[in-house]
Image (cartoon, rainbow over all chains, first blue to last red; front, side, top):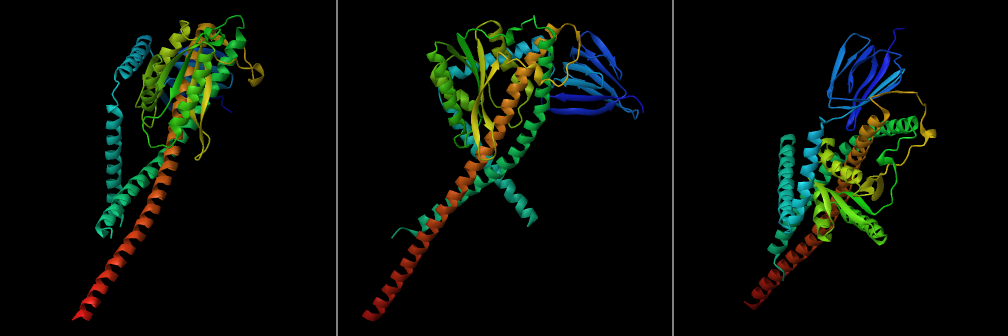
Length: 140
Length: 286
């Protein structure tokens, strides 16, 4: 039996890859790592880059990760991938935007927004209704 | 005699409302299923994260990461996850009620309360309280993404790191089943330590670059994934609540139409009888 190692690539939004592999290459924070079966247990952070998985059938899977965490056990590799590109300044900008929105929300005392939203909701529902009716006519 | 025409227009208007509520119910049903799927998909990641935190804390018991140490609570932060849109029954009202309970409880203990709001309904409600709102994000849509939450969560994590808040809670609607959604309060920070007995196997890992460095990255992602899970669960709850509310509205509209139809028929009958009586009366007079 050929030696293989099980690879799971999961992100917070779902599973990306799961299956056996002959060899896996990952972009660890200290440099790329090649993982063969029976690798020593290891935990590391990942930087943005691609995870390369060589399956026993000889095909290759490429998965882009924005960063994440890598865990290696002798028979299993788990990549906890970030779905978004992570960098200190990008995170910082996002945080600033969130703060800014909070200030904006406090300033705006008039309840105009909710009225506009209700109106938008109504038009959306009406549009959906029209679509359903159209579909029905097509079917009937 | 009430005009039959007025009743007819009334029936037509109720019917068109019923059509809208029915359409919304169907849309909510299909969206709920998809949200439930996403809830399930988010689980393995969070479980894996938690196990990794357990390994890391076991590996170097001397190092205490600030996220794991409980401080005296002088000030707290609450992340409130609410919906963006209404027409979903008492979902948001219940959520806000339990949030108010939570913050009153802490205020009585003398703690300051800082808020972080996800969803525009929460913004509309809490801005009247005059409490400091550190961050907010709205219009995540039916498919929230982790990347839309990173900034908002970071504001709270930074506040915790800098000691401006000593506890971080998250309030969101828990999806129990289609009929039941209840608000839950969860403590995000400090992270509850993982018991070593919960870990199936413990490996002696090699850490790159260091256990402390990895722990920081893992903890941050863990909190983010928790908030993401909260947001997804809230979407599922919203859709379920809207489905039930819209079904009730459609049923009510149906009842209303039946009643109006009865009144209409009676009015029509009365008009005919009256006309007949007039004709007969007229004929008799000739």
